[in-house]
Amino acid sequence: MKNVKDTVEKVYGSKLPEKVLQIGEGNFLRAFADWMINRMNTAGVFNGSAVLCQPIGRGLSDMLNAQDCVYTVLMRGIEDGKVVENAEVITSVSRCINPYEQYDALLEIARNPELKVIISNTTEAGIAYHEGDKPTDVPPTSYPAKMTVILHERFKALGGGSESAVIILPVELIERNGDNLKKYVLQYAKEWNLEPEFISWLQNELCFANTLVDRIVTGYPRDEIKGISEKLGYEDNVLDTCEPFHAWIIEAPKKWASVLPFEKAGLHVIWTDDMTPYRTRKVRILNGAHTVSVLAAFLSGHNIVLEMMKDEKFSHIIKTVLQNEIIPNINLPREELDGFAAAVLERFSNPFIKHRLLDISLNSVSKFKARCLDSLLEYTERNGKFPEILCFGFAALIEFYKGKMEDGGYYGVRDGEKYEIRDNADVLSFFEKAWQEGDVVKKVLANTDFWGKNLCEVNGLEQKVSAYLSDMEENGMRKTAYILAEEV
Image (cartoon, rainbow, N blue to C red):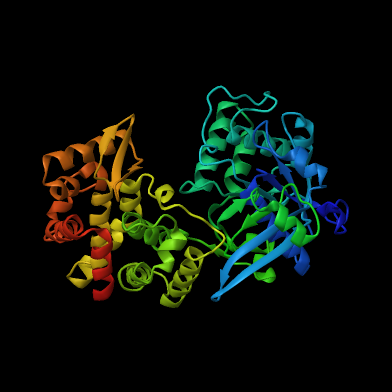
C-alpha cells in the first residue's frame, strides 16, 4: 500500500514561505493549528507553511520527515445531529526539526523575515522558569529560555522595528498563557543582560497573545489503523484523529487578524480584547456540565460519557442544568451561549470517543470549585432559591468521595466493586475522616481550603445538599437521579 505522501502534490518552499514556527509537533497542534493553516491555504488566503520544532529531544521529527510532513487528520463525531467522518490530507507543514541535533536550523528560522507567527504547545509545565539556563546553551532547557534566544536572534538579524515583529500564540493550558510566557522571556532577557533595545522591542512590538483552545484530539488510532488505512487507500504512520468541533479564542489586537485570516477560511476563531467571558463560557458550560454530572452517572452504573448521554434521564439533567442553571449567569449573548451548549451536547455524544468517567473524576473537588460553584452561588443570588441540579451534583461529589484508605490508595464502592478515588492526599484524608465522624455535609461545606469561603454561611445550602445526600444514601444514586430528572 502506498504512503500518504504519494497521494498528493505538496507545494512549499519558495512558493509557500515558512511563515509559522511551531514549537511542538504533537497530536494536538497537528490536528488544530496546522489543520487551520491547511484550511487557509486551501482557501487561498494565507499561502504559507509551518516549520515544526520538537520542544524536547525525543519526538516525531523523524517519522514526520519520512512522510515529507504530509499526514491525515481524521475528524469523527456528530454535527447537526448526524455522525460525520471526514479525512483531510495536511500539506501545510514544510519540515520538522530537532533543535537538539539541528540547533543552527532553529536560529536560521528565527532570522527569516517572512516569519510572522510562533505557536507553541509544550504542555502546562513548559511555560516555566528554569534556573541556570544560559543563552550559550545549545539549546537552553526551558521553553521560555529557548524563546528568548529565538527572539534575540531575530532582533540581531532584522532589528527592533515593527516589520520584524511576530505574534506569539501559546496554547498551553494555563491561564493567561501569553502573559506568563512574556514574563519569563523578559526575566531571561534581563538576567542575561541583553540590550535595552531588545527588551523594548519585546515589550512594545511583539504580541504575546493569551489564547484558549478547544478541540478533543485523540491522536493515532492504533487499534483501528488497519481498517482506516484500507478505507483511505494508503498508509499514514502519523495519522491524527480528532472531533469536528474546534474553537480558538485569541486575546490580541485586531491588526494581527490580517496576518492570520482564519475567518476567511470559515474557521471558528475569535479575536478579542478580553477572553475572560469565553474562558468562563468554556469552563462553566463544557467543563461544568461534565463535573456536575459524571460522578452521579458513574455511581449510577455508567462508565463513559457516551453511556451517560444515551441514558435519557441523565441527558435531560445535563441539558436542563445548562439551559436553566448555568447559561443564564454568563455575560455573553444568549444565542451564542445556546449554540456553544448545543455543540457541547453533540461532543458528549461523539460515538468515536470513549471518555471514561473515572478519568474525568480526577481532582473533582478543585474542579467543582472552578467549574460549578460560581454558577451555583450566582443562580442562588439571582433567583432567591437554590439550583436543583447543581446542588444535586454537589451532593453526588460528597457521595462519590465516600471511601477508605487501603493498599496505598483511597477507594469507594459501586455495586459491590471498588473504584479508586484520585485527588490530593489531604483531600482524600479529609473525606475519609469526615465520613467516619459524621455530619459530613457540614464539614465539607465549611472547608475553606476547598472553596475559599465557608459555604455553611450560605443560608439553607447545607440543608439542601444534605437532603439530596440522604436520598442517595437511602435510595441509591440512580433512583435519586431519575426522580430529579422527572422533576426538573
